[in-house]
Amino acid sequence: MKFLLFLSLGLLNLLPIHADFNAVATVGMIADIVREVAGDRAEVEGMIGEGVDPHLYKPTRRDVVMLSKADIIFYNGLMLEGKMGDVLVRMARKGKPVYAVTEEILDQGDYVITDEENHFDPHVWMDVQGWMRAVSVVEKALSAYDPEGADVYSSNANDYRGKLEALDAYAKRVIGSIPESQRVLVTAHDAFGYLGRAYGLEVRGIQGLSTESEAGVQDIETLISFLIENKIPAVFVESSVADKNVRALVEGAKAKGHDLKIGGELFSDAMGPTGSYEGTYIGMIDHNVTTIASALGGEVDHGGMQQKLHHEH
Image 1 (cartoon, rainbow, N blue to C red):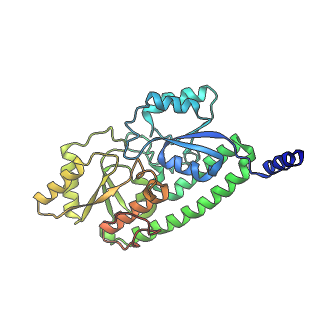
Image 2: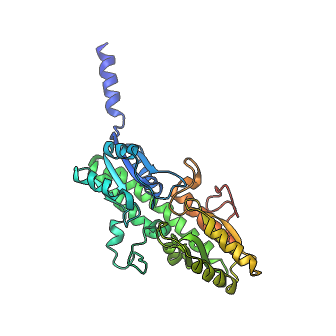
Image 3: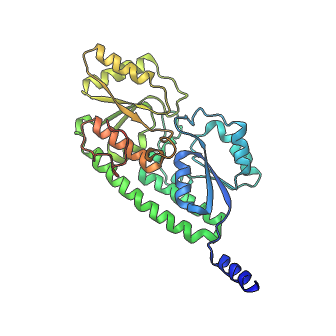
C-alpha cells in the first residue's frame, strides 16, 4: 500500500503543474493574443463580445465583478475603452496588474495615428506588424506575473509571431493585387487607417475615429462625389457599427448613375463569432483583407489565407 502511495505521489510530481490564474482582456483581439501566449497556464476571459462597439460600451456590474476577480488585466489603451477608463484606473490603484497592450507602440514616436483634433487612433490591430508589438507586451506581462511560465510564454509568443508574419505577407500580397486606381477603402467609421498605411490603401471613414462622432449630410455628399469621380466599385459595412450611412452612399451614388455595391461586412472593433475562424485575430484580418481585395478587383486565395473563411464576396 505504501509503495502504491509513493508511486502515485511520484507520478504527480512528474505531471506538469500549471499556474491557476485568471486573465481578463477588454476586447476579443487582445483576449486572443493572451490565449495564444498563455496557453493552458491561464484561464482567459474577454469582456466585450462579437458585434459590440467598444467606443460606446459601458461596463456592467458583471464586468466590474469579472475585473475584480481577475489576477491580471489587459486593455488596448489609446482611448478605445473610453467609458471603461475609470474602472481600469480603480483596479490598478488596488494593486492589480493592469497592462495597456499598446504601451510599446506609443514608444515608437510617430507610429500612432492621430486625427485633426489630436485624438489617438486606437485601431492598431489593423496593422499586423504593429499588433506584433502587443504580443511582446503580453509576453512580458505574463512572465512578470508568473515567472515559472516565462519559457512557455516566450516559446508560445515566438510561434504566434511566426503565424502573424505569414498573415502580414498574405495581406500585402492580396491588397497589392488590387488595381491601383481602385485601392480606396470606404467604411462606416475611420477604423482602418493603420491597415491602409501598412498595405497601401487610401482610407475614408464616414464617421471619425470614434463611433461617437456623427456624419453630416455634407460629409456623405462629398464622399458620394469622390466615389463617382474615382469609379470606386464598392464600399463596406462593419459588424459593430450601424450600416445606415454606408447604405446612404450606395443610394446616393445610384441616384447619380454610379453602380456602387456593398463589398461585404468587415470586422473593425470586434471579431467574428466565438469559436469560428473569424472569431480569432488571424481569422479577422484574413477575412478583412480577403473581402476588401475581392470586392475592389484584386486576386485572393479561395477561402482566404488558410482556406477557412466561411463567406467570400
